[in-house]
Image 1 (cartoon, rainbow, N blue to C red):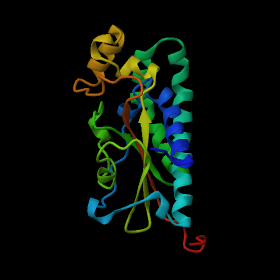
Image 2 (image 1 turned 180 degrees about the vertical axis):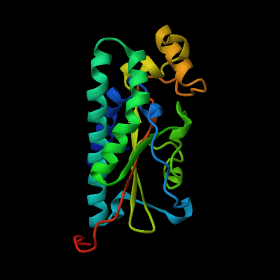
Image 3 (image 1 turned 120 degrees about the vertical axis):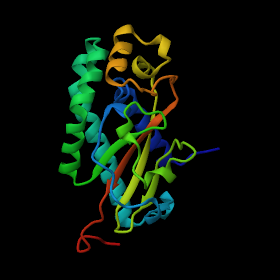
Image 4 (image 1 turned 60 degrees about the vertical axis):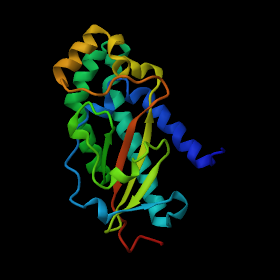
Length: 216
């Protein structure tokens, strides 16, 4: 089966994000603000080919926010990772990631988070609108339209080899990493992955544009 150039581009970018993002358990360590009050029934899935002009701009904003969050998290974590202190990076991720996510959300005027079916932090359960998009564990972006023009987007995160420091087989984790996870996340479910596996998803909610600025 062949894939469209846009799908390949998005999946490749998601894989690049995963290379660094999962090194310190970013998918599962971040806590985000409470999901919106809209119920699952208020949202409708939208095929990428059916996105309108405004929705495509919303997708661009979602992708930009994902990149910004990744960049700022890695700027904080890379000194520890380069020094081999993966256990320390897990602690930094737990303490600093929520603030960084809140800063990106406020600056870009949207909401962003990450989720998985194998959570490290239970607070990272997906918002209601994202649940149908994640059925079947998709490895390509999916989209949903909210009742007020908000666009929801989910982007896959794939496991790269370095991610296995925190998300590989439990028995293969370094003792210091295992101890940090046991201390910070006693109910951790986010291990047992292999390189190339789907790890989880970024989710982003982008509000509708001001009607005066929309060209739909």
